[in-house]
Every structure is written in structure tokens, then in C-alpha cells.
Image (tube, rainbow, N blue to C red; front, side, top):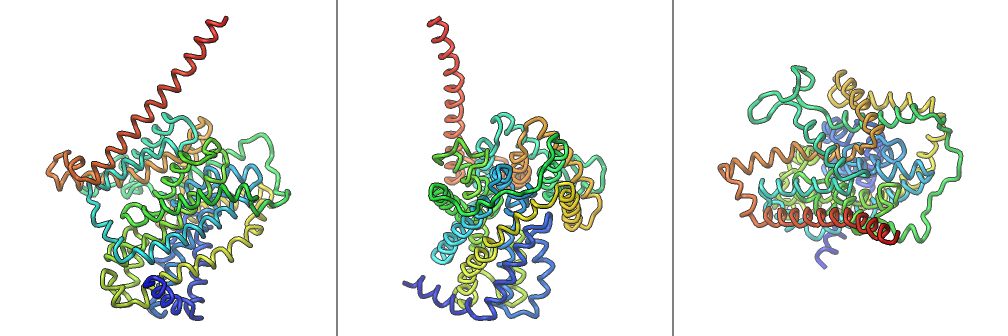
Length: 504
């Protein structure tokens, strides 16, 4: 009853005309930000942060939050339609773009929109009911625990890859090595930069993602012998009842995964999408179809993406710890308004806390109302001849890459990864595991170093800590299980050949 009373109190603030306007502005801007290559919520909130001085406190926070979770849905549109992902929509490129190639773009976008709504709704329930106490869960995790969590994330490669497990692990290792380029934070030494100044800060995630997915896909389409024709078929938008029954379980699983990982520093939408995809590929009734255009491959990751975006507010508002750069900017917005996020925020500023929580569900409705009817307009891009479309896509890729650091060298780096991504495609190597390794590699190194520093070089800290030890035990069970499955797979063909020889 207290939760319902608090939510009713929050809706009283969120449903004012002024806050509704700021929520709508945030959702619209966030969706447009997600559609543009390279320009993410971090850059947009950075640009709009000075505006918070002249906007009322509640409206400013609601607008910035709307930009953040609105961009999560916009990311999936560009990933599904053009295979141009942001960090939080890498997995959407796998099945979402395969559905586009099969003429099911409308269904994929509708699935992403509905699943995002489900994920956001579940996360808001978690945020409203458990925020006062659930944020303390993040405090239980130490560097060793996060290190083990990153190792568990690497195991997702066996589910994310659409090729063989060995190729997936190799691509993941390549991503880890790429993540080591730049200046070592502890020693200040440059690693693998070849004395090139523009590599001193490392390779940008935007350059890797746009190159390996967007530019590589354009190059592949231009290299194809058959000419790509404009879209002229009927739009299949609404799912059938059978498809709808496949969407709901996947979206609920993704919501649960995203809600949990959004709480943990270092988690968030990026890792949540991989984890939800791995879970679907393990437990779904249609797991054999995932990777070749299955609707579960879109639903689960979209729900996890939105759920993690919302529950990432829990550590910020309950214990005052931002878990990612976007939350750090949100914390700056709180401080600008003279509010210190933390345990006393709920009791000291209940109107802001519950108003922000309620506005997230209002924003959820705005995103569905805004984006689902626009699916037909997103599809109109396919009516443009590809000879006209691909230069425009390349132009936006270059603009998006340049806008991150205002550095022309980043465009050349993106072009180099575009060539590398094209080579991967020709060799039938999946780029998604590379992105997983690129994202998790530096995080794993950071937490490993912290754990070693705190334990004075003792590896037993990974076993002695209950959370880390439990995660390592889970990893060991998983590896043994994978070896058993591999061994049985090798034995069955040998047994069949022996039976056929004896019969002959």
C-alpha cells in the first residue's frame, strides 16, 4: 500500500502539464539521438546540461532521463533497419537485421517497441518497490566479484556468436586486444599505439561499432552481384497470436536480466543485451532459430536494454553512486539543482524521487505512442534506391564519428574497421563477439588490478569472497557442461558411421 501511495504521489507531480511537456521533449530528442550514428545520450546530455540552470528542477531531471531511455529505443531502429548500432544495440543487429533481410522490418520494429515497453514497465516496478534497499546490493560487490562477473560475461560469447564457438572465442580475444590500445591508467605507458598520437586515448567504441557493422554491411551490399531493389512489399507490422506468444516470455526474461544488471556498476544496457540474448538462446523453445532472424532475438535484448536503462538510476538515487558516464551526468544535474543523491534523497525530496519514477512510465507510454505509429515512416527509407541511400548512410556515419571527439582521425579509424569488418564477413566471422570482448576487456583488467592491489597479490581473494566464488563455480559448471556437449556431439557421428559400416 505504501508503494501505491508513493506512486500516486509521484504521478501527481509527473502528470502536470509542465512535466508532461518536458517528458515528451526528452523522449523525442532521445529517439532522434538514437537514430543518428555516433551521437548517443552521453553527448546529448552533455550539450543540454547547461539548460538545466533555466529549467525547473523536476522538469530538467525528467527531460534528461527521457533522453537517456528514449535513446535506447532509437538505437534499435538504426540497428534493425540499417545495421548501424550504438553500444546498447549491438545484439539487435544479429536477428533484427536478419528480419529486415527477410522483409520483416515492420514486425522487428514493432517487437522492439512493445518489448521496450514491457522491459521499462517491469524495471519501474522494481525501481519503485526496491530502490530504497536494492541499491545496497551494489555495495556488496567488490573488485574480485566484478572481475568474476566480467568472466561470466565472456561466456556469453558461446551464445552470441552465430558461427562456431572457436571462431567466437577468437573474435572475442581480438576484441579484448583492441580494448588494450591506448594509455595505461596506472603506469601512464602507451600500449599498442605504434607512436600514433590519435591512438593515445584508445580506439573509440563508436568507430569499432560503425566500422564493423555499418560500413562493413554497406561494402558487402555494394560487393553483391544482385542489385538491391527498393522496398515495395506489404508492411507486416502486427504480430500474429503465435508470434505474440513468442514475444512475451522473451521480453519478460530480458526484463528480469536487465533489471538486475542495471543495478550493478559496470553492468547496464550494454552487458544486459548480451546476457538476455544468451539466456534466450539457451531456454527459448525456438532457440535453434535465434541468430537467423528469430523474433526472440529482438524481444529479449530490447526489453533488457530498456530495463537496465531505468534500474541504473537505483545506485544513483539510493546510495549516490553513478554506475556509468550517463548517470554521472545525471548526478551533475542533481548537484546543479542543489540536490545530493543518496540515502536521504527519498525522505528529503520525495516529490523529485517519486515524480521521476512515475515520469519514466509516462515516458514509456510516450515512446510507444510516438514510435509504433512511426514504424511505417521508418520503413519508407527502403523506398529510396540503394545507390542514393548508401552515400547518405556513409555521410551520417562520418558525421557521427567526428562528433564524438571532433577529430578527423576517428573517421579514418572507422574506415579501417569498416575494411576489417568486411574481411570478417567474407570469412564468415561474426563481429558481435568482438564487440563483447572490446567492451568487457578493459573493465576486466581494471577490476582485476584492483582486486590484486587490495589482496596484495593473492589470487585466493577470488575464491574466498562468497559472490566471486559462487560466480566462478557457476563458470566451472558451465565450462564442464559445454565440454560434455561438445564430446557427445563428436561421439554421435562416430557411432552413426560405425552402425552404417556394420550394416553394410
